[in-house]
Length: 268
Image (cartoon, rainbow, N blue to C red):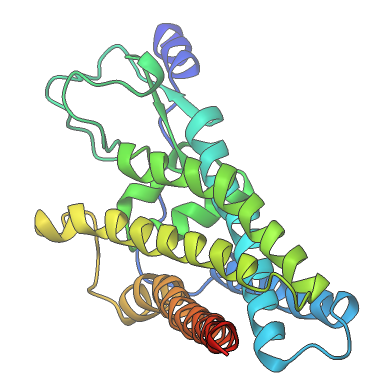
């Protein structure tokens, strides 16, 4: 009896990932947190943008600040779970068979995250608020509860490159410089292209393999978690690319007109 107690102390059972469609405290707090971030981004735009800022400039500022905060706080916490939240596997667990009711391995056979054969990492094995948040989202996409190599690789780029780019774009929008306006569109194009590529690489492996990690059986999973939250990072980048094309085309037309006038003057 004592031996069994000692074994359970050495190898506590992994936390059971959240299951089932339910709107509970974690769901409500998660959605409220997104609303607070959006409200904070808008409030900041009111405070820092000049009174002459156009509606388009304000929307672009709010979007990029919202984008930065979501990536930093939410996806930053996802990376924290992947690197610092872990569960020590019991000796009775067979990595070769990879079967356990509450343990899901997302890495290929003989591939171990951070080279650790005896540990599993990810939100599924934590009990903190951000672990619970990602356990909630993992109901719709199981990869976010553990360590999926593609997702983690993309999120490293998103947090450590995407966030500084968003902040830089907000600063360019705040300045509202008329000269060199194409500079901001260049950075917005670069970020928007990266966002679209990241979204494609997040879901393409699932679509090409029959979506084994996605659960679309419930309206909340399909339309709120998977569709609404991810489509934001499709609609806004596409709109930004369209506006950037218009701005660049207009600038090129003006430059061409100046060249034509100078050419005609030269002939005279």
